[in-house]
Image 1 (spheres, rainbow, N blue to C red):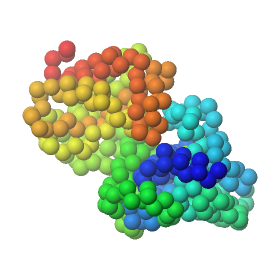
Image 2: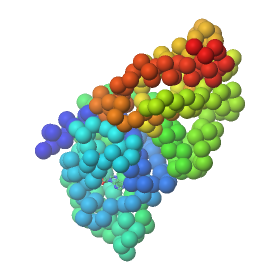
Image 3: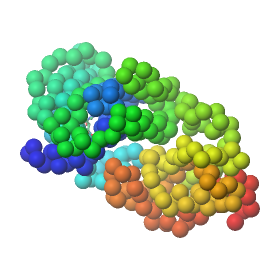
Image 4: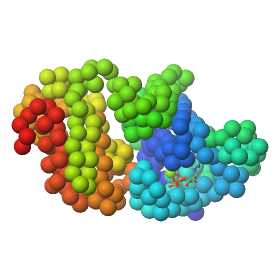
Length: 323
Ligand code: ADP
Ligand code: MG
């Protein structure tokens, strides 16, 4: 019912950036090569995510707004899909219960697409849409029926900065996909499909990052690390970028962060920050992603070994002794 939907919505949809994250993940799950996100007023007035993915049939599209109506059950088919089952098929119904949603979608294999609106969880009349393959989901007036939650939101610039970070992280994790983000009609991020992680980092961050960074590479039988870390001479008090991905998902992991800091050790002047974009790929059976699906926390069964791998890789990359 309505209450259940809105309680679940509170878990999944904390703020506009969470909506962007869920919709962009759906686009990527649908095999999109291009994802365009248009936002107005920090996402409070409007969030529109349009993709060129596989789209939904007229039968399936309304079902996507029913709780637990995921098409991805048990889908460990790619590492991107790893998340707790409890949140499977929750995103669209949760979002739709606290906003006004418009959907336009087409599979490209039929001569016509489908469009409809969902207001406070209620699906409106289905009608024809252009047959162009892909999906566009518009989320307007987020939390219009949740004044209490709306009060906890921060300013438009703050909410937008969270959205921007979500987009940056998606772009880093998916370097071969084209991403574009606009805010109130102004282009804020534009990443044409890149051919490597390095090229994508170059599209996102100032030259001073890659230009002053060293490559980090290391492997053990169950895990592999790659990425870039700033030469400590060029570190400042800035904290951008500090991005860690585990199996191509952005995560916070205090332990790994400490391992990076230990790798820098005394190379780093006091008060200066390590900057890095690191991709840690760990065998799926050695990662526990059940901590919290939206907060991006993970646990490693070989925590000590991962810590050592990261610490030594950073230290070696910076030219420190191999221990
Ligand atoms: P989940 O992603 O966990 O399956 P969601 O509520 O996010 O749950 O989405 C429900 C379903 O709607 C998906 O399983 C998928 O079948 C469909 N769907 C959502 N977004 C898209 C999209 N952009 N393109 C194609 N199908 C989509
Ligand atoms: Mg989803």
